[in-house]
Image 1 (cartoon, rainbow, N blue to C red):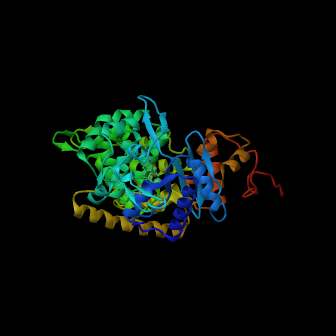
Image 2: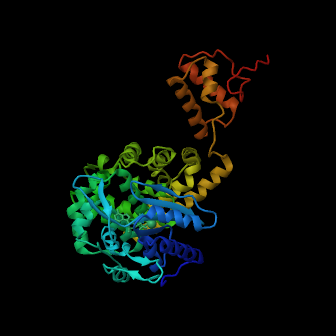
Image 3: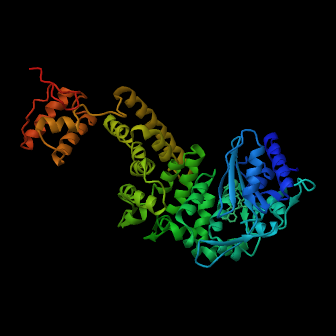
Length: 488
Ligand code: ATP
Ligand code: MG
């Protein structure tokens, strides 16, 4: 074997070769594993293709392995899988495959190795190495995949229109591999992607988003995102992002291209964090700009409220892209909503109360917000960026000081909504919200001290203004969760 395998992998291949010999099956290790070994990248899963019954081979291999891994299989697809020493091993019978127009369901029939290699997406993913005795270790490379690996090129084994039309997800994969491996998509291949872009519509959103997230996890996602944009694919499934692109000029005043600005912010974020959701926050931070863009006479372009619009757009985009509807989505929406706040603190005389407010609003996500905000500082003018970053460091120091002094992160006001409902004998209502906010704001502003008595006094004052009368004096119930502990 010419590729550099671990002892474990070699042991596994030996068992596979032996089992195949017993049943007279021909089999190969194929695809991503071979590609990544040749490129010296970490490999994850091993794909075995065999001429014949892949499920039977998987069972006979598993029987011979220590611990007898459990085989799961799909009869309909002729695929089987087991996990051995942390390696996912997948077996499949060689297939001849074609997709009908407008259908996601392929027609699959058994085929030769070459048939199977033809239906692979790229020449670099079609490399196969024999595992059979006699030909063990031989590389079968009918489409010059080795050459493309050394030239760093993404090419399809067949006419690109055929490959892409059969399974349009391959267009996303071409861009993902170009980004991940730092390869170039051949111009005629890229032209075919442009030409076939609308066919991406027959692919399920889950598969598309899977590839999109792989692009987002690249070390420099801007490359892949720009290719998605320039091929026209992005517009097919994510038009809101495409709406960021372009520059309008009025009265000689232009604004920055928010699409390319966003790509820069994603790359900046990616250089500091590999959290997928923080990268999504970077992607969406300015998504509200097109909807809020105005030209103000004598002043220029403004995007007032784009952070609020962006926050509201986030759940809709998550739904559209079939991203999770959970706390990750809330986290992204929150960062989008707050993304202007830290930078606004670099201006003029900022009070402690503004610092407290940000600490309170950001809570546990403050570090991520600061990282996003710092990544958002982009300009062609290096001096300007340097100055902003220096001011930004000062904000970080101030925030730290205020937090140490006031412990405002994860802070709860001393009078809760439950307390208010009990004191006034009312249920959840707008009045409770108003009273709660009054207390919280007064403490954050430093108007009253952060303790129960001060909060209670303010509550009574404000309630009187609102013609509300207490039914409970509230004095003894600081922390009983609303149950009366009448000590009088
Ligand atoms: P990674 O595991 O990093 O995503 P990979 O190339 O191993 O990359 P897999 O999805 O694991 O990708 O697929 C394994 C192999 O199956 C690929 O190398 C390729 O040969 C083939 N393959 C996967 N998806 C497709 C597809 N949509 N069309 C054609 N061949 C595919
Ligand atoms: Mg793989």
